[in-house]
Length: 337
Image 1: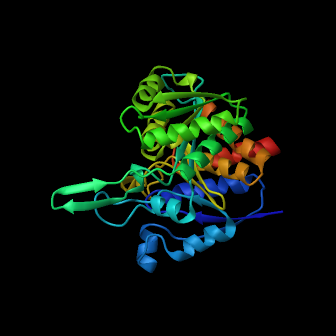
Image 2 (image 1 turned 120 degrees about the vertical axis):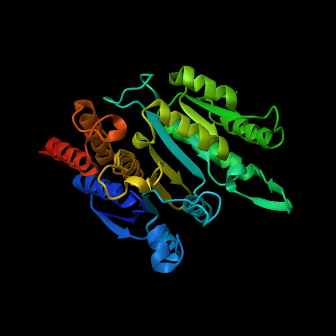
Image 3 (image 1 turned 45 degrees about the vertical axis):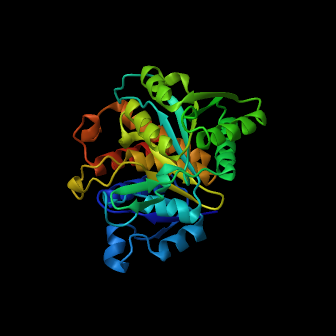
């Protein structure tokens, strides 16, 4: 039985990496009907809105989307497409698996952790207003409901994937009420999962410990802004945003995306690294219940990287986007021949 998936190529390098990811996923043989929609600049040009209602309708109808990067203006302009998607679809859990890949040189070996980030509240929700001219206030709002459900998600993920420990990061020494509520909820959920280890760590100490020895962490649970920062730090430990997949998951929909930017300076030049979106496609396949196909995508990607012949510029090579796409598709087809 096939699946219907919304495909949002995005802008900048988005269409190129989305084409590569789609080709790899199709090469697995899983039957997917792609429902393509426009987001970002193409949607502005077509409908005057970077995230038109037709996109929301497609994701709600299919329940699943694969999304390329979308440019977000700095300072002014329209609100982040990613933030709008998370809020409108209540995609409360950001999931970022981070692991070392063969053939990608890094300072640490055997890194294998998952960042679980609350996606809807806190400072990153962008609730700002001007109090008086020259004075801006940002609201950091936490609710018990959101803290409990993201903690439950993290512990459920840990049990499902056979992971040993959840580490909750905080700054409750200073933000005693908001981060204190977050910790109270984490502790309550941890008590319901005695088979999964639990620890707490200040977010600044976490950053230091990750740089010193990331292998000691397994599932790291963070509120919204901390999670955004720490997840990018962790990507740097394994080769950068070009090799790290991402997912935004809610009760009724899930959006899988590359977490890097839209890189408009190299758009259309066949230079972009498509691995992050390809690996996000593997996460999507697993979400759809296509576990064998997801494993094959990861294995094919790993094999291409381990061979060392096909790498994009950000990984020290000279291959183009289509070269990487074709190599992974060939590896997939060779494995099934």
